[in-house]
Length: 502
Ligand code: NAD
Picture 1 (cartoon, rainbow, N blue to C red):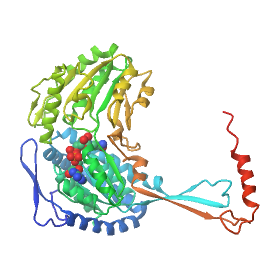
Picture 2: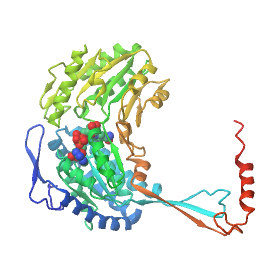
Picture 3: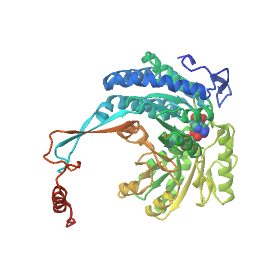
Picture 4: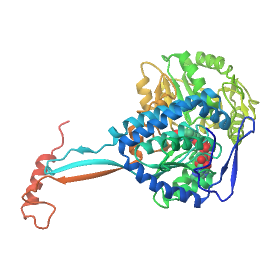
């Protein structure tokens, strides 16, 4: 599919270029949309939202499944575009397209069941009332996306919002506008009637304009620093927000965990997509009894991970040039504090690539254990036991995902980890499970996409009571007899005033 700008509102002549981080080649030129163009897109979306909501669950399901089918059929084209614009190898691009397709399929099929009107229970006091709740679309949802998973990340919010009956105005990262354009063009092919999914392109100013454009909710995925700005901008109109922010995910390995599997998954979880994953394994806490074997195996596997531009490479370039300085700073800081590299070293940063690095003897206050590194760097920390691992993993303001390799204590550790999602005996799997909510705690944000929670996140609940028959006297009336409330009080005490025995 060609990268076109047919559907985008006019930009008044200002444009920006998107280029390959590996080769510098031009991928496309895009309009720099300002507040006026963003407002125009939102106003067009408002009309489209009414039409889209009017289709009902059945009509939307058919169209969303057609969108899914188109993305699956053209996955090769989309993966190639992701590779060119973001730099990641085709394998990483394919995995994110696959996940996006799976999530679309799930929300398209399940939205009716999750959001359909349902009866709610009544109480003794209100026994003459029937109660029901329904989940209505919000209207227009603004989605602001990052560059590191330009298909998977925004499509989670977009799919949930569309399936719940909203129109969407999507602002992709300025590093990956062509991928955003591809998604909107593909959608317009299967839903040509109305601009239900539009793309506005530009940088942070375009995102800020979308926050202030009177949309009914903003779903933001990006860094905690930008998340704060988004929330502040949205506060002006009391526009609700979902914030999917950064992470510093920990992996815990207990003594009875499968060490070979843990090492293999740790290396993939830390290094895939060159570590530029919100859910990347950025710290491993390994109990003393398993530590030496785990480090040995991790070193063996990580040393084989090849960065580069070609088809044979395991990881691509660092997409955001400024991130190279962050990675270098984290490594220098760690070495200054006495860390040792068992794979890679101080010269691992070779712009635009970073070679895999595995660190040991890293003190807790090192940047590489505290802040998001977003590079193929894995610090491994020796701990006495699983309790210490959990305590140190939880001593972070972030709380996105986590992973545990253990047997006996696996569930207990998984629950104790302060994160929105935890996988046992694997890494990152929860992101691909369409029936589960996705989101974090603390600096990793709040609100959920994916699954039933994601569908409700982009709906507003509406409660209705219906009086089935009148009672002889109503409490909610000035005409009630004087004896009514004392009688009700006696009944209340009979029913509620005794504490339960246990
Ligand atoms: P970023 O915060 O720099 O930018 C994200 C988006 O916000 C971009 O589209 C950008 O143009 C826009 N933006 C910038 N300033 C804005 C403003 N003032 N108002 C509105 N929008 C504005 O993040 P990034 O570098 O694109 O992405 C990397 C970050 O995203 C990492 O921290 C990563 O962990 C996080 N991330 C989180 C998830 C998740 O699901 N939790 C997924 C992927 C990435």
